[in-house]
Image (cartoon, rainbow, N blue to C red; front, top):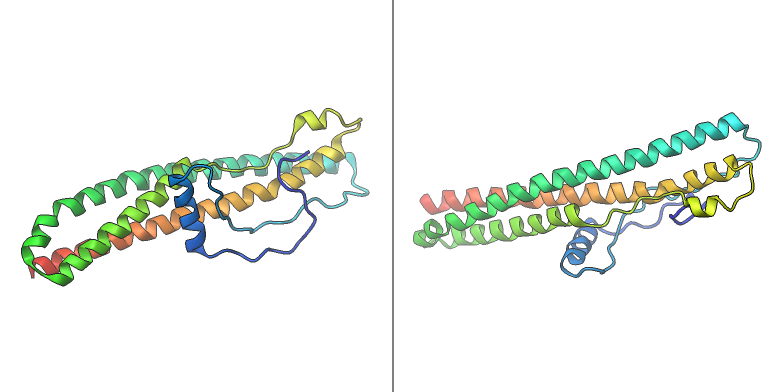
Length: 203
Protein backbone atom coordinates (compact mmCIF):
# COMPACT_ATOMS: atom_id res chain seq x y z
CA UNK A 1 0.00 0.00 0.00
CA UNK A 2 2.92 2.28 0.67
CA UNK A 3 5.43 2.83 -2.10
CA UNK A 4 8.36 2.43 0.27
CA UNK A 5 9.67 -0.90 1.45
CA UNK A 6 7.63 -2.05 4.40
CA UNK A 7 9.67 -3.41 7.25
CA UNK A 8 9.32 -3.84 10.95
CA UNK A 9 13.08 -4.09 11.41
CA UNK A 10 14.27 -1.54 13.93
CA UNK A 11 17.97 -2.01 13.17
CA UNK A 12 19.91 0.60 11.24
CA UNK A 13 21.93 -0.79 8.35
CA UNK A 14 25.65 -0.16 8.03
CA UNK A 15 26.09 3.27 6.51
CA UNK A 16 28.13 4.02 3.38
CA UNK A 17 30.86 6.66 3.62
CA UNK A 18 29.97 10.29 2.97
CA UNK A 19 32.29 10.56 -0.01
CA UNK A 20 30.85 7.36 -1.48
CA UNK A 21 27.34 8.82 -1.22
CA UNK A 22 28.49 12.18 -2.60
CA UNK A 23 30.27 10.80 -5.64
CA UNK A 24 27.48 8.31 -6.34
CA UNK A 25 25.17 11.33 -6.71
CA UNK A 26 27.71 13.08 -8.91
CA UNK A 27 28.00 9.89 -10.94
CA UNK A 28 24.22 9.72 -11.37
CA UNK A 29 24.32 13.31 -12.61
CA UNK A 30 26.89 12.44 -15.26
CA UNK A 31 25.43 9.00 -16.05
CA UNK A 32 21.61 9.14 -15.74
CA UNK A 33 20.03 5.94 -14.49
CA UNK A 34 23.00 5.01 -12.36
CA UNK A 35 22.00 3.87 -8.86
CA UNK A 36 22.95 6.18 -6.00
CA UNK A 37 23.97 5.33 -2.46
CA UNK A 38 21.98 6.74 0.43
CA UNK A 39 22.00 6.82 4.21
CA UNK A 40 19.56 4.70 6.20
CA UNK A 41 18.63 6.77 9.23
CA UNK A 42 15.08 5.47 9.55
CA UNK A 43 14.16 1.82 9.01
CA UNK A 44 11.15 1.44 11.25
CA UNK A 45 7.85 0.22 9.83
CA UNK A 46 4.36 0.09 11.20
CA UNK A 47 3.50 -1.51 14.52
CA UNK A 48 0.63 -3.95 14.87
CA UNK A 49 -1.89 -1.21 15.78
CA UNK A 50 -3.83 -3.81 17.74
CA UNK A 51 -6.34 -2.25 20.11
CA UNK A 52 -6.11 1.23 18.57
CA UNK A 53 -9.37 3.17 18.72
CA UNK A 54 -10.76 4.93 15.60
CA UNK A 55 -9.83 8.39 16.89
CA UNK A 56 -6.29 7.20 17.58
CA UNK A 57 -5.99 5.80 14.08
CA UNK A 58 -7.26 9.10 12.68
CA UNK A 59 -4.61 10.95 14.68
CA UNK A 60 -1.91 8.66 13.28
CA UNK A 61 -3.17 9.22 9.74
CA UNK A 62 -3.07 13.00 10.17
CA UNK A 63 0.43 12.80 11.64
CA UNK A 64 1.54 10.68 8.68
CA UNK A 65 0.20 13.27 6.26
CA UNK A 66 2.02 16.02 8.11
CA UNK A 67 5.30 14.08 8.08
CA UNK A 68 5.13 13.37 4.35
CA UNK A 69 4.29 17.02 3.69
CA UNK A 70 7.21 18.15 5.84
CA UNK A 71 9.57 15.79 4.00
CA UNK A 72 8.55 17.25 0.62
CA UNK A 73 9.02 20.77 1.96
CA UNK A 74 12.44 19.88 3.39
CA UNK A 75 13.53 18.50 0.01
CA UNK A 76 12.26 21.59 -1.79
CA UNK A 77 14.20 23.80 0.64
CA UNK A 78 17.36 21.77 0.03
CA UNK A 79 16.83 22.05 -3.72
CA UNK A 80 16.51 25.84 -3.45
CA UNK A 81 19.72 26.08 -1.43
CA UNK A 82 21.42 23.85 -3.98
CA UNK A 83 20.40 26.24 -6.77
CA UNK A 84 21.88 29.18 -4.86
CA UNK A 85 25.09 27.27 -4.15
CA UNK A 86 25.38 26.24 -7.80
CA UNK A 87 25.08 29.86 -8.96
CA UNK A 88 27.57 31.11 -6.36
CA UNK A 89 30.05 28.34 -7.17
CA UNK A 90 29.89 29.14 -10.90
CA UNK A 91 30.87 32.70 -9.96
CA UNK A 92 33.79 31.40 -7.91
CA UNK A 93 34.91 29.21 -10.83
CA UNK A 94 34.83 32.26 -13.08
CA UNK A 95 36.97 34.17 -10.60
CA UNK A 96 39.43 31.28 -10.51
CA UNK A 97 39.78 31.58 -14.28
CA UNK A 98 40.28 35.34 -14.09
CA UNK A 99 43.24 35.10 -11.71
CA UNK A 100 45.08 32.52 -13.83
CA UNK A 101 47.24 35.14 -15.65
CA UNK A 102 48.34 36.54 -12.29
CA UNK A 103 49.14 33.05 -10.99
CA UNK A 104 51.03 32.08 -14.14
CA UNK A 105 52.96 35.35 -14.14
CA UNK A 106 54.18 34.83 -10.60
CA UNK A 107 56.13 31.68 -11.53
CA UNK A 108 55.37 30.36 -8.02
CA UNK A 109 54.83 26.61 -7.95
CA UNK A 110 52.95 26.69 -4.64
CA UNK A 111 50.63 29.39 -5.95
CA UNK A 112 49.92 27.31 -9.04
CA UNK A 113 49.27 24.15 -7.01
CA UNK A 114 46.91 26.08 -4.72
CA UNK A 115 45.14 27.41 -7.83
CA UNK A 116 44.74 23.88 -9.20
CA UNK A 117 43.31 22.61 -5.90
CA UNK A 118 40.98 25.61 -5.81
CA UNK A 119 39.64 24.87 -9.28
CA UNK A 120 39.25 21.14 -8.66
CA UNK A 121 37.49 21.56 -5.31
CA UNK A 122 35.12 24.20 -6.68
CA UNK A 123 34.28 22.08 -9.71
CA UNK A 124 33.52 19.08 -7.49
CA UNK A 125 31.31 21.34 -5.36
CA UNK A 126 29.47 22.52 -8.47
CA UNK A 127 28.75 18.93 -9.48
CA UNK A 128 27.42 18.17 -5.99
CA UNK A 129 25.19 21.25 -6.01
CA UNK A 130 23.86 20.29 -9.44
CA UNK A 131 23.15 16.77 -8.19
CA UNK A 132 21.14 18.19 -5.29
CA UNK A 133 19.10 20.30 -7.71
CA UNK A 134 18.31 17.70 -10.36
CA UNK A 135 18.50 14.36 -8.51
CA UNK A 136 15.32 12.35 -8.14
CA UNK A 137 13.94 12.73 -4.63
CA UNK A 138 12.27 9.57 -3.30
CA UNK A 139 9.45 10.16 -0.85
CA UNK A 140 7.03 7.52 0.39
CA UNK A 141 3.40 7.73 -0.64
CA UNK A 142 0.16 5.92 0.03
CA UNK A 143 -1.09 4.03 -3.02
CA UNK A 144 -4.76 4.92 -3.19
CA UNK A 145 -5.45 2.41 -5.98
CA UNK A 146 -4.45 -0.41 -3.62
CA UNK A 147 -6.26 1.22 -0.72
CA UNK A 148 -9.46 1.32 -2.77
CA UNK A 149 -9.45 -2.48 -2.85
CA UNK A 150 -9.53 -2.75 0.95
CA UNK A 151 -12.85 -3.56 2.54
CA UNK A 152 -14.06 -0.92 5.03
CA UNK A 153 -13.34 0.17 7.62
CA UNK A 154 -10.05 1.31 6.09
CA UNK A 155 -8.67 3.44 8.91
CA UNK A 156 -6.31 0.77 10.25
CA UNK A 157 -4.94 -0.08 6.79
CA UNK A 158 -4.53 3.59 5.94
CA UNK A 159 -2.75 4.33 9.23
CA UNK A 160 -0.40 1.40 8.64
CA UNK A 161 0.27 2.58 5.09
CA UNK A 162 1.26 6.04 6.31
CA UNK A 163 3.49 4.57 9.01
CA UNK A 164 5.25 2.43 6.39
CA UNK A 165 5.69 5.42 4.05
CA UNK A 166 7.83 7.53 6.35
CA UNK A 167 11.21 5.77 6.17
CA UNK A 168 11.91 6.41 2.49
CA UNK A 169 11.47 10.17 2.78
CA UNK A 170 13.47 10.44 6.00
CA UNK A 171 16.38 8.61 4.39
CA UNK A 172 16.18 10.81 1.31
CA UNK A 173 16.14 14.03 3.34
CA UNK A 174 19.15 12.92 5.40
CA UNK A 175 21.06 11.97 2.26
CA UNK A 176 20.31 15.20 0.39
CA UNK A 177 21.27 17.34 3.40
CA UNK A 178 24.61 15.52 3.60
CA UNK A 179 25.31 15.87 -0.13
CA UNK A 180 24.48 19.59 0.04
CA UNK A 181 26.70 20.08 3.10
CA UNK A 182 29.60 18.32 1.37
CA UNK A 183 29.11 20.46 -1.74
CA UNK A 184 29.34 23.58 0.44
CA UNK A 185 32.52 22.18 1.99
CA UNK A 186 34.17 21.66 -1.41
CA UNK A 187 33.27 25.18 -2.54
CA UNK A 188 34.62 26.67 0.70
CA UNK A 189 37.84 24.70 0.20
CA UNK A 190 38.01 26.09 -3.33
CA UNK A 191 37.61 29.67 -2.13
CA UNK A 192 40.19 29.16 0.62
CA UNK A 193 42.81 27.80 -1.77
CA UNK A 194 42.03 30.55 -4.25
CA UNK A 195 42.83 33.11 -1.57
CA UNK A 196 46.02 31.25 -0.71
CA UNK A 197 47.05 31.13 -4.37
CA UNK A 198 46.45 34.85 -4.74
CA UNK A 199 48.48 35.70 -1.63
CA UNK A 200 51.36 33.49 -2.76
CA UNK A 201 51.28 35.00 -6.26
CA UNK A 202 51.54 38.61 -5.11
CA UNK A 203 53.97 37.95 -2.25
